[in-house]
Amino acid sequence: MSLKSKSISSKSSLNEDERLKKISPLRVLLNRPELGALGGSILVFIFFGIVAGDTGMFSAYGMLNFLDVSANLGIIAIAAAMLMIGGEFDLSIGSMIGFAGICIAIPAIYWGWPLWMSIIFAFAMAVLVGYFNGIMVVKTGLPSFIVTLAMLFILRGLTLAITRLITGRTQVPGLRVLIEDDPLAWLFATDTFKWLFTWLGSLKLIELRTDGTPLATGIPPSVIWFIALTLFATWILMKTRYGNWIFASGGDKVGATNVGVPVGRVKISLFIGTAVASTIFACIQVLDAGSADTMRGTLKELEAIAAAVVGGCLLTGGYGSAIGAAFGAIIFGTVSMGIFYTDVDTDWFKVFLGAMMLIAVVFNNYIRKKVTESK
Amino acid sequence: MSDYLVQFNNISKFFGKVIALKDVTMRLKKGEIMCLLGDNGAGKSTLIKTLAGVHKPDEGEIIFEDNKIVFDSPKDALDIGIGTVYQDLALVPLMSVTRNFFMGREPQKGIPFLKTFDVETANKIAADRMGQIGIDVRDPSQAVGTMSGGERQCLAISRAIYFGAKVLVLDEPTSALGVHQASMVLKYIVKAASEGLAVILITHNVHHAYPVGNSFTVLNRGKSMGTFQKKEISREKLLSMMAGGEELDKLEVELQEMDRIHNKN
Image (tube, rainbow over all chains, first blue to last red; front, side):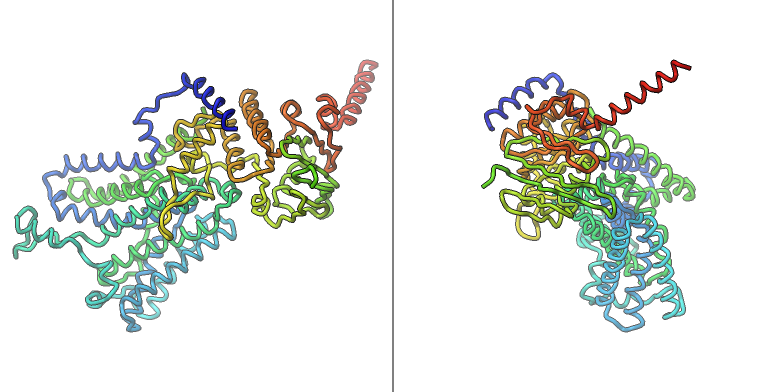
């Protein structure tokens, strides 16, 4: 066999030599899903560098500001991107953020639970919600768009109803005092690399307050979570068997099932992923603000999906990347904050968001055609 | 021990009142290519699914290497070595050659709980296997969508063989292909058989089946019209059997009759 096959292969490679097309590095780059978002990010930075370079936007404080916004969005965008690669949507992300917020606040404030227990409770509820979304989609075969749209209303309604029933209000304040000495809350509420900022401040390299402490005190927890999740998601997608199953489940459900990929289990786990990411988002924001608001996270699901799409995820599934979604989030975060530093009215932000998405979808569609076109 | 690698004896399958298959018998030796011919609705799809373990036969028995086998799921069929390549191929166009080749059965390395998909090994195996068929994948990380129909078909077959198929069931492997592509696939099928696999080639294209087949089973309306060795039967005879020769003859007579009446008026 080996002899024969060798002769065949060597002959054919000779035959096909003249057909070998040189693939330019540009073409290789174009085939990466995150290219559009990476280019977009660079353009956005160049734009604000020119328009707002002399304002405070690119000071340490200003940069942390827009990075914080980007990072928060990025945390849910990465989970949304992984789910989209797996071929499904989750429209209940925003509602889950609000729901997770009161799952932390009500037990901690009204039932006297320690904060860490409320946080674990919120994550447990997230796993439950994600599992329910997933099992509904997998077992009924209904589009996830419908199932999670229903969940969007159910969760937001539950959040409002329960909060008003127990507290009589729509906000639950008073969490800030509980953060100190809590064994878990620091994960979501600690600024890191403070020493770096103090040192930079002492060298007068960054802006200082009147009392001499630096204006930017440290890297916010959202940024650390954002970076960690981007790396983790990329590792899963590119380097693990489970990652291959995600691509396969989204690319061709029937085909994947036929070769033994547990498509149902993959999808359910991805739905749990978006719900858990929403809860991480909620933890960071609730502990930062010190209060839970029933309306927190409204419309975040759409921003997350928009960031994922700008990041190169196809709406039909099977293609995309976590790094792309991260850059998509950076674009949105940077523009939403940067716009304050320009003379442009902030009302225009949504126009930009929509236009950006449209361009991204057209671009992605073109790329998909390129990738799948036959010889 | 009998000569046969696999035997499907008197297989019947009913769906409610509908008799999808009745008393179909097929026996294959190692290295044999049996072509299963039949028109649309002859019961080919049902038979494939029965071979692949998707359906359980209502009557009859499957004997593999002298052991009677009952399939409870497609996985059982796969495990004993019946590899089915469906018409849709179970390939994802947006995924790379390697990722498709190992889809669902990725090689892993590393410590438990932190196991990673061994992409280097997978790339090497995929490129090597495709090279053996004479398909030069310059870059195993290229998307399957960039491959031609024939190359995709070969990839799916090669995958089935790599993962231990002893009996290959191929569902219309040439139906969507041009002449050149089809001959490339057929060549590969012959090569696979020469290496000791038994191949069941399902097709409605006699011109593709006749040159490569050793034996031919014709299916018509759920029943086997018999299995014929190549020397026993001509291409024309096969063709006419498959299309339900009598029906065509009858049609011809009727047309002549109509013609006659028309001319008279």
